[in-house]
Image (tube, rainbow, N blue to C red; front, side):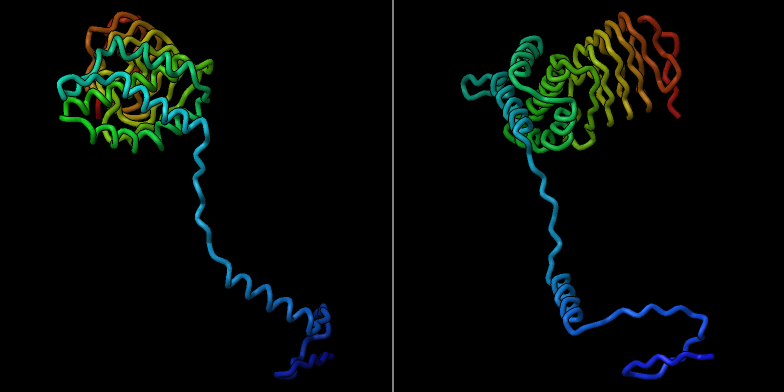
Length: 249
């Protein structure tokens, strides 16, 4: 037996064993659907806004203040103080502000690239730009070492120039995503550092701790007093003594 269903357009025949659900349709419900449809068409896609937290603003200001304090201007010539003098200044600034490990990573990966570009534009020469990059590493190291937290992650891929003296005098556990230069982990005292990237010559007076590089290493010097260095799971330096050289395939 066939059941007839009638619509405005045509007659439709359905088998009697097919269950048919009937929903009442009124002019009001149709009008509501039309209204909703129009709203979807009118609606515009909004781009997500990146809100800078107050702590991030304080980190940006602290970095700018640090660069001002390490700069010396005499007879129209811009110079910088020595690294041994700069690091204590960075520590003093870092201890005055509150931040978390995620704040530091966000600062390095998002704020720092633009801040470094601006700072290096103001330099008189490439040499001064290099100094700026080196002081930047000391500032980040001061943030890490003076923090009560132990574990940090840094994404440095977006910075416009290699950061000198990153993880300077390190005592924490740090994971770095990106390539590092030959001043990386200078005077490292302890902790555990893992680099997910390549490294230049490891020539940094390591005093202790463990440094692992999951990438290429240009070489290892004999200026490592203590500590251990690995390339992937292969140990290159054991308790300050070179036992193997890097293998870069």
